[in-house]
Length: 547
Image (cartoon, rainbow, N blue to C red; front, side):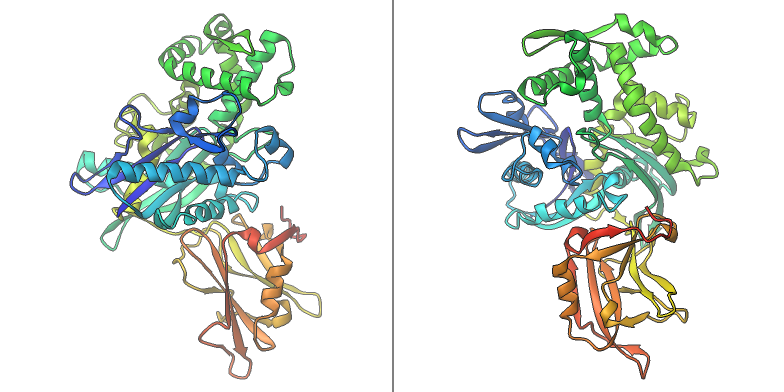
């Protein structure tokens, strides 16, 4: 049995293992030539089969095929069925189905390469935007359930945020380089194909082991206007549409997401990667006069048989329009409560952080010089920016480091009394350090578990921010409400909540003895929920200033 960490990227996916004999995390190569899998699946309708990774990349645009990219970012269910259909999805080939086919391929190939039959612990990274709101948090549970559908391949699954994984690698990297433990705060900026994630983590010694405690997180990557995320993929698609539109005099938003566009994207990505040094040098030269970039051609491509040139000004202008404001907002959100950002160590990871304009914006924001102690020891070589998440996940999978579990949202109950007064009671609070699977209770003014009538046990609250004023009422689905109503309990009950390591909730119902003012030692019922959508049907604003 082997433990592995996966950086499941929107553009590329990488697998790492911790080799105990060498004491280092290493990348498991899919073949003898590359270190990552292109996150692409092609469905061949003639043969009714799925082709994944590098083999799929060579089949893009082939006859009787459908190409799927960025499917990870579609697990958050923020794209309409109509727009999913435009990208080739249907009732059979859903984003969940395509993700399962891809991850099964990656895991099986890794086991074959390592001569193993099963994964003991799989740690897989999740975008930070999947922690930020009720609209996206279920994607974590969905990803976890996809991996749990492979019991013959995987025994245990843990979902840890991508920047937290990257922070773990940076901590390990620093200790290896300087032979001393790193203590203090690290700000990780992880910019990849689908998402921008930031995490401010505190590194500390806990029970003889280095522990990573997330303190502040922010992210961007929700899907809007039929775009996948707000990072590398969205940027590349925006450049491609602008170049085609300007060359062929057609509206960019009318360009279909079809085989011709997919082929153009593939060719453009290859040119962008192969000429990254040229792009950086040119943009640095014209940083004070970007109009000069109009005369510098990156490449000449073909779209549906027609020639299309891409110039560096198109890259620059698309960046300023689509990426710059997003990165500015997320950096502001992450550092809003910091008294002195100069004392932070800063690590830049993810493939998009290698893009010149991204790096320049971040360095300008933090006023980072070319030689700066804030970045010292975090990343020792450029290649580690892309391996950091997978390596960190491998360190967590093998328990070389541990992560402190922090609640990403608040959950509790509320009661409305006959005189109209309302009392909100959270059992678990946003940002609270929690133990997985421990039961937490909403407490009354005496610090005792808060009792309520059994007829009102379906009055739940959720909150995705620090302020309780943003709490929202969530209404249970009929089937979940029926489960609650069927619980054999007395007139008065106490509700407890627990979360596992992936924030999967279990609701615990206890009988309450009014005469002795105490709850039963064991719950009458425990109702586990894989995702919030298993529990809640709709969201109703409470009038408490919530949103």
